[in-house]
Image 1 (cartoon, helix red, strand yellow):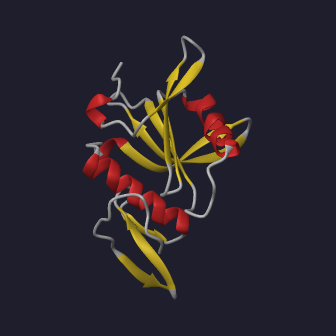
Image 2 (image 1 turned 60 degrees about the vertical axis):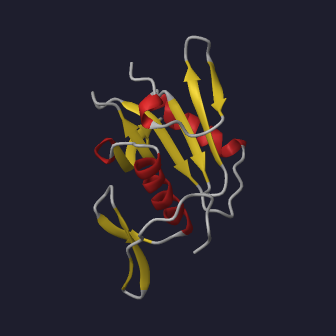
Image 3 (image 1 turned 90 degrees about the vertical axis):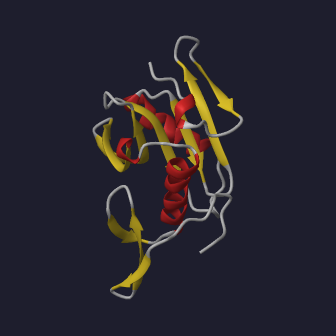
Length: 152
């Protein structure tokens, strides 16, 4: 797999039915090792190990219903009261982060109404803080540490 702009971690990869699978520490099972999953696993480990996010408050492949259609958020960080606080959307490393990616995560946010939106292809990462009072969002210079997130 490709080298990413994220710290490496002790991957657990094996073959199942002739295909590579990787262990997802959030879902606690092996999942198909696609380029997007490679990014997800690196990013989740980065959030937990480098940024101090509690593993118990992260969920992968979170289903939601948007305009009558089932969608899946790649990763959601929850607050201690179990309301969603952050949505993370992943793309494969060769997928450019474009406006359509932000539109996709923005649609998910119509349902979840989170404080932070994050998009990453493993090479480039973007994080914005939502300001619902001013009806805008602010791009942050980096992914905030968990202890720096607003906890209201």
